[in-house]
Image (cartoon, rainbow, N blue to C red; front, side, top):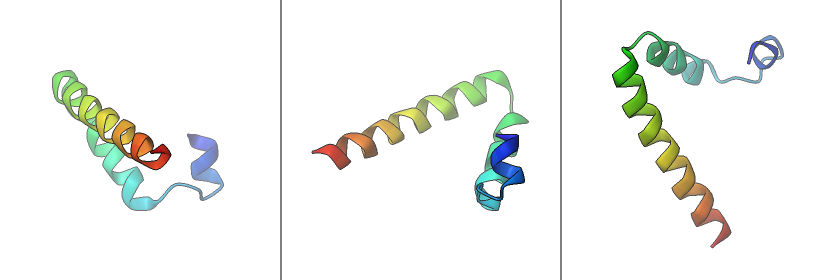
Length: 49
């Protein structure tokens, strides 16, 4: 990810959210990432349908 940051390819608001999630407890991170993974999967499936 550092390469993307150095190249300016990461949206600042997205990066801030990632940093916020990293600071959370393991349980909270697990729940957020589970939900995020499900949303990403849903969008990808919708795109191929």
